[in-house]
Image 1 (cartoon, protein in one colour):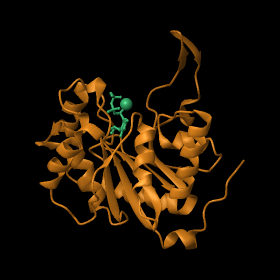
Image 2: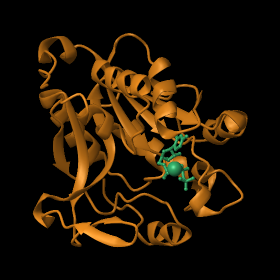
Image 3: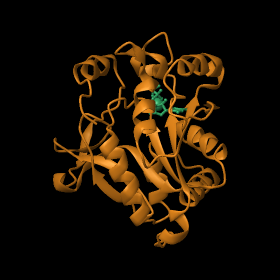
Image 4: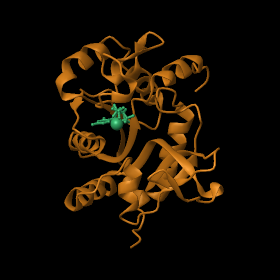
Length: 241
Ligand code: CTP
Ligand code: MG
């Protein structure tokens, strides 16, 4: 089933919100602090993407989604940062990433028509790339940043290669991923009803058969997952945006 893109005229009047997801624990980073509070360049990790999203002209408001048990710690950490006036209070996230997305969506005011979901764990995202993916979503109804796969990818099961998808068709998905709010709500609702989990929002929207535009992003917008990624990010201070 293919869904039609939402009417650009109606959605053109609606505000664009960013959900900044920082509610994960960061098990693989093995740090004493929750991942989004781990320092990078002397600031909590979440502060970097927060500043970039706030600096993006197309983004009207930014909602940080944080671990429920650490809400106070996050509020204090963010309170000392420069506030562009777009920042909303922290919203407690859920057990899994898509629960955190759902919690963020519930907190959005009614005049928000577009939502850019971004991982706080991607501190090096650039303003220009956020702008481009928002613009693409406004045209197509949904858009994600992604980079072409450099390596040949294998589908592997039980330690054995199952197949090799053509490399030219393989891209690594990043965030922001931008959707019409109603589309993402439908996708989350359907996934919950069917007990499906996705490792990103796009996967859940794909299941509705909706078109999702792919916008080529920057390899520097990688996700901090393991300890060595922090050193890599330190080496990649953003000089331009
Ligand atoms: N995230 C979230 N809520 C969750 C799980 C993840 O908001 N329940 C967010 C994380 O804070 C992160 C992003 O989703 O910014 C991507 O997830 P991932 O890199 O897996 O982060 P963690 O889940 O924190 O790390 P790990 O899987 O190693 O525990
Ligand atoms: Mg995780």
